[in-house]
Length: 226
Image 1 (cartoon, rainbow, N blue to C red):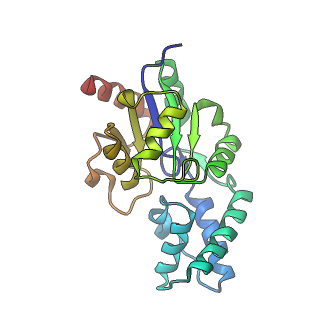
Image 2: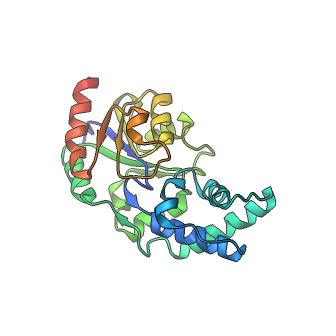
């Protein structure tokens, strides 16, 4: 089969609404440190730069900081707890599976490029029955670099046997816009994810508000770039 485009997705806040389980794991760590929980509505936009950064941001909410060794310990605690509860309430965003079906039917290759650890990403997608849809699932530990470093996107595309010249990135936050810009590929932003800066202000090439809009956005962007 000849693939037309490689569509590379961010995971948290783009493919899957993972905020409830991530914030539950964060609050588990904070509780063990004797610190107050962070409300879900206030914490959604803390997500997106990996577990360690989420913990640092969670501490900042209460005006706290911690040593490197303490952050190391809390991160290990977070990952252990989160791995056991990774899909308790996390669910694909509405319309996702239909959009992926449509893209696959149009002959596009799909991949995941996330700042989540690779094994956690695969565990989550396995639990949700989504893993088989993707030619590659790559995390911050896969190549030793994280978004917005363009190397992670380039190597994800290579692992998926795609070509950067025929790649589109889909994401919800500045790291996704940044990695796409640095790698020289067009990017579609989603407005329903997790970001401190509104995605529209980051100027993606196209912006969608529901996953049902994605196949049309990919088709429109492909026409613009060809």
